[in-house]
Image 1 (cartoon, one colour):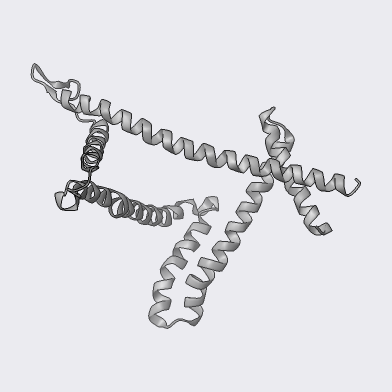
Image 2 (image 1 turned 60 degrees about the vertical axis):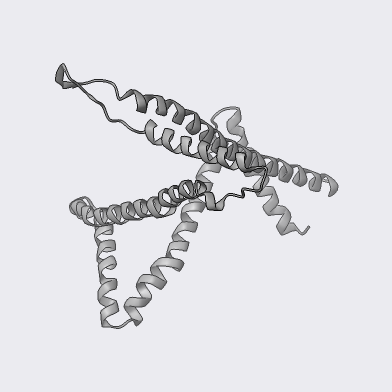
Length: 233
């Protein structure tokens, strides 16, 4: 291991110890390490945006594109200029136009992604699992396939019922609303179980990933100390 590698391993070990010091209490070492991390992340994102988005997708089409392409590239360029001008108090109102455009596009992407990437595939999966043509009637595990289909259907119905916030009207007083129907209330209780299992699985995945990163940092610090001791320092 050369001196350059040893230096950067030492920097990583010091920063790791500074972050782990937060387990004791909030201190200036943790704040310094956090500021370094945020600064490096911001700098990396700026360079990435310039090299991967702004230059190839905005500047180059304006400089080397035809008239039609330059016209279309003029729209995001104007929005960027308005967003930059909004940082000055005198032109603060200009931010509403680019922010409205970004919000609309972002909402469309999120809704489209959730619909096409999650809701519809999961709905088709629930329907397909009840298709008898896909079952192996000669298998001894047929009952297990049917049980999985029933459990999946209960999970879907229960979860959707849990997020049903409708209320039935009280016949004695049309203005007041009573609790939601008993059917949705019962199915919602079942949905709570499935939601709890899903959140528990997500938490277990996040915890195991974090624990793996912690073990990796501890091993890196141990390796750095062993390298220093082996070098006679």
